[in-house]
Length: 137
Image (tube, rainbow, N blue to C red):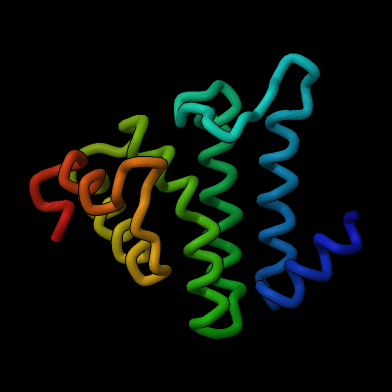
């Protein structure tokens, strides 16, 4: 299976592939303990989405963006980064002007990617309005 993962990462993320692989490894390590289970509807407050993971993911994904050989690949990395940003926003790990900037960036990338639902039954636009008065713009 690792061969198939690497084949996809190399084809889709080009020079950023090793960093995306490192991000996936980091996430996998978070849920390797026998007592930890990741589920599709886990809360952004799940224990495995802790500050250590978020910090490590941000570092790796920053490096992946820098390694991207063109704007197409850079955008793909940004889309892969949306879940990390979502956790930061949904758990109020970022506040003030930094939160507003992150929310604006999240919405910009999500909309550019054609994402219009943030979860089942909740549109991206409705979620954005709940996140802040200027977020939906």
